[in-house]
Structure formats: structure tokens, C-alpha cells
Image 1 (tube, one colour):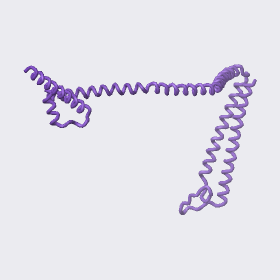
Image 2 (tube, one colour):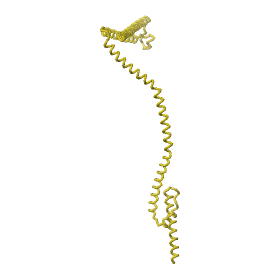
Image 3 (cartoon, helix red, strand yellow):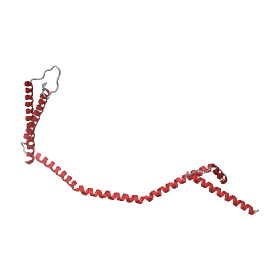
Length: 232
């Protein structure tokens, strides 16, 4: 009698163990999003293993989460395995950058030295001009004021001459090459009138040339005085 019971218990335990293994396999398959098992197979396995559909849902959710966690660990390991190569590539790039920086510094060092020398010379020149200005001859201010008046007067005359010439040209008579306007019913200027206009423009142009030359001469004289003061 006891041997029969033992055989039955062993058989039941074996069937339950197989049912538990089948249940665990169903959980694994469903959690991995593989092809789902047949509904009747799931129902039979749930009944044989003593599990409910709620148990299956909970265990599948847990298995999915564990799959995600293992995926995170695997990804971290894969990325960490690439780290030595990444660090080596960064080291090579840094070495190239440092070499380029060293080459740049070496190339521009003489140029920077020239810039420094130029700045120093400009500073010294500014101080020198200031001292020359303070120690200029006594009559320099009077001469400079007089020349400044001459420059302003020459500039004013040039402006007047430019305005006069512009006004002359704006009054070109009808029939003149510079006036292509042809209003109906208005007679063109006679050759004598056109000749008189051209003569006036010529005089105005000559006046402007004289004024420009006078201004240039006044400015040149002023610059010569400054150069004389700096040289004396």
C-alpha cells in the first residue's frame, strides 16, 4: 500500500514540476515578446501548476523588467569595452591639437614680437610728439593759427566755386549738348547764347581749379610747418 502511495506522490510531484517548468517557459516566452503560446496550452499549464491569470500577468511583468535590467547591464558592459579605444582616439586627437598649437605659437611668435615693438614705438612717438609740442618755437602758434585761417579760407572759396559751377551747369540753355530736354513750343538757344554759356562754365571751372590748388597749397604749407616743428 505504501509503495503505491509513494509512486502516486512521486508521479504527482513529477507532473507538478513539469507544469512549473512549462509555466516558467511560458513566462519567459511572453516576456521576451516572442511568438505567444496557444491559449489552450496556457490554460492547461495554469491549471496544472496551480497558477492564476493574475499570477501570469505579475510574473510576466517582473520578467520583462528583469529583461530590461539585464539589457542595461549588457549595454553598459559593451560601452565600457569600447572605452579604451575611445580614450586612445581622444589622446591622439589631443596630441595633434597640441602639436598644431605649438606650431602656431612658433610661427606667430616673431609677429607678436613685431606687434609689441610697434606698440612700444607708437607709445614712444606719442610721448615724443607731446614733448616736441611743449618745446616748440615761440612763434609756432601764431604761424599755425595763420595757416589754419588760410586753409579755412581756401576751403570756403573752393566750396563757393563748386556751388557756382553747379549752378552754371544747371542753367544750360535748350539745344546745348548737356541739356536734352525739349519742351514743346520753346525755342532753342542761339549759337551765340550757347557760346556764352560755355564760356561761363569754362570760367567757373577755372575758378574751381584755382580754388582747389589754393586749398592744396594751404594744407601742404600747414603740414610743412608741423614737420618743421617736429624736426626742430
